[in-house]
Image (spheres, rainbow, N blue to C red):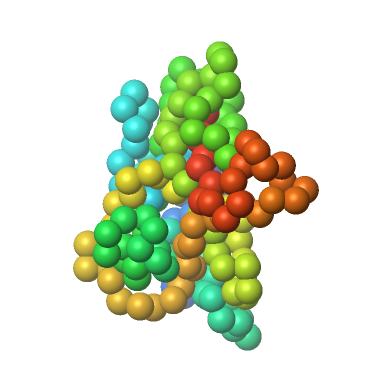
Length: 190
């Protein structure tokens, strides 16, 4: 790894600094992969990458806790309901970071499960996000249609919580959407 890509603080005595060093190393690896061509993407809810792509790394998803905190803490993530699979409630959520060499662009399309012409599907699933009333809300992601669970991670720790995202008609036209139905999503590469 070229030294110019990776600059870290010389003092890494506490856990936070060690965690940041790991993040910086991962960032360096990802930068080199992008330089080599291809598109990076997260395969949310999976420990592996789709066929014809390469795994960069796989880890649990971190995020904010559902309740307010006086300081920043990174927690693990859980499926908060059984929408994502039988007995998925409170299971911990993995994420694989993948690279697709033939592609140079990616787009996440909510509300669809097929890519537009001239785009290729990397994976599809359901739009997921935190409950709108929870503190530390984060953006929506495309959770794989048949997600994995992290073995032994079924404690109800209430870190970052994932719920299905449903549509509400009004400024969102129905049809093509349907009132109170979960929204699909697809990640496409070109």
